[in-house]
Length: 529
Image (cartoon, rainbow, N blue to C red):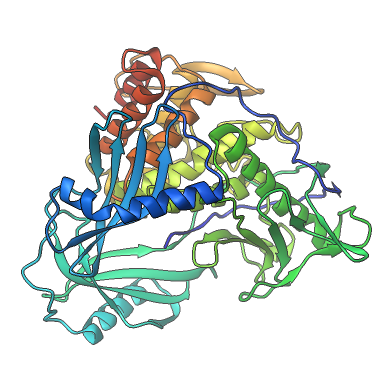
């Protein structure tokens, strides 16, 4: 499960009018044989069903061991007939963490494979020497070290094969639930070696982060009339609903309603921004990426506004498939801006595709992916109240001096993020190890050096002082999206991200194209060769 949170602040006064599309303009379309076919939900379900029926044959063709089985997670078909099938693996009936892989098969029947790990999946025994009770105790100690309040392992540890670190070992996975120090829910996944009891890995599934709070102005909302009242149910976008938690921290809350379908003021202001943000992000996925919702199945998430008291955060949770927003300090600055919604929904997108582990370099890439899509949605919205930019958190003044939280052109300007890759990057907090990937995206989009975009001045450096020429944000986002959905896996690090984006650029534009060469140059410019 992947969950995400994003710290931000917003003070908004907005008005919604009745049903219609969110106010946004599509980016320029592009044509390529590697563009994904837009499946209907039933077509996608049928494609997954057909692929699952053939998993025995696929496992044999991949020369997997006799105890390994494949489980289909997704199927993407390109317009040139190439099919990308994403699988999870089991071994002797146990889930293999880090066993995910993607098979790419051309229309001519030629196959290649992208694996999270190259090691053969095999363990000497599936009998654990360390008991589940001991594993649970280790997990609770890990939660204590993270200062998790009300920590409890509600479910028994499950036996797994841990392969994400390289050599597969039998392990226990324990999920400890509680509350993080800032009030964010906690779902800490702890993996323990079943032979030694050693902690192998821990992953806070509810991820904390940062983003912007903006004034969206008067926007159009998708609503539904029930009897004599209207409610925030968007029937044109998977029936996305927006609820009022009324300062609670559990449950769904109460669906927002209104008598005249003109939404503004009081508790409705946050709800309008939440609903609008979800709609614009849905439209961006559909119109720019050709994706039918977060899971590409036409089903919307839902949103919960007014979470907790003085809660300065927002988060995405795969367990409820929902987004949740706090009201900020003093319950007066709701964290409900457009790019907060886009950032959180994009954590859901990552969970539905590459499922990047939220730790080490893959965690930095996970966080950067949400920043990248959040930025792209902001440009896509073309909202004059908040012109698109490559600054993260520029409106909230969380630093108290008017500076943004993060800068994509030169990440180190925030005082903590890294501009370039180094061998120690995996030891850095994921919100700062995301810096080089954000920097890569900026360079690929806009190039190096000084320039002004929408009134904001940028000056992006490179590792060796080389000059990089950008290919435009539209092409850059298509390359990142295709890499995420067809070539990245749970363990993708920066070196593998370079390979994934080059594969994506080659598929979309050709390996001799300017776009392909620009991808390589942008990675070199952040010291990933």
